[in-house]
Image (cartoon, rainbow, N blue to C red; front, side, top):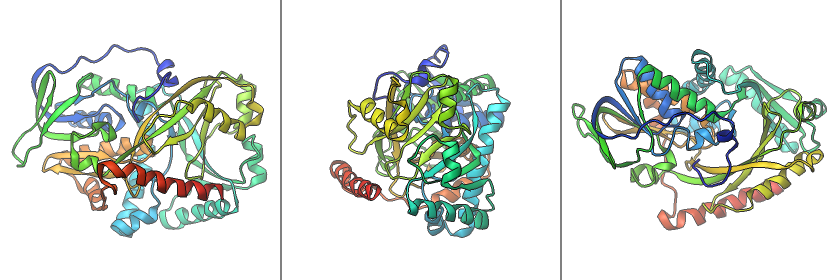
Length: 429
């Protein structure tokens, strides 16, 4: 996600920190990281802890993209089904990828604890169904992940029990994950930045990369240019996602940016807010155009789900999401919307993550497709392992085949809009 809107609750509820100075002049480093989101900061922190000299370049400010704008939900697995990964890389490596995702959930909690990041982490996540087909799918998911992937933190919740947990008549079942959770994503990202800086990472904000000279040989340096300086580094990580624009055309062709939007209500008061979701879990439904929501620690309801596949920012996002809140929680018909924001997230054609190499010592992370809160952190750790000489876990992701979005630069969005209209029709049916 990137900035497209007005007031971001996460910004307003985070203490203002002194900015990191822009890059000026030529510097040398062992590693240069492009992108000040969770994946880039995680990689920078892990590499610095291994003793590497690291420079991180961020075009705007840390957490400007999806890392500081998302719904803040920590969800198991990937945006794609595990069957997609099984077909792409085989059962054994799909299992290893599952284990990486589970490690990502634990890594997130470890980073919060180790670096004392104040990000309001709350355990518990629920996926809710709305029809019999959803109910059956959630039951199957609990069995499948337990039997095939040894994941035993899921519990199926029937409609009667769910009514005692979520104060809405809209949902028919739920899958509760005690291993998932939710947090304040911008404070988490800024906390990672503070930890990286304290460890010795040189962070430069307001440092838009204008040109990359990717090394062709393993013994050569990569050169990264900004408007006011350059970095010469043996290793390079590109972790900008959709915000890179056309900086790396071969990566841009594998992504498309979609707009997504979130609101936060006025404070509801402790009693009223906690009555909405009694176990205080984050909630997401099973529709293609899904709703997701959670109660914040200051008793506001955060609610997201409006998307724009056309790339055009709808000016009525707040009004539309207000109607969606009323469908889920009609008892909140008097609650004001006090914050409304949005941005872009990058998706791949198959919703699988896109990791790989641009050169022998140049790596990239992108295409987390809405599951970035967890996968981004562990992806950064995998890059640090690869640079340190143990690349098996990172390189297995390069076996996932990613195709360009069809239609080229002019027709790819109309084609996507038509496809999403079809999936929206399935939701309505």
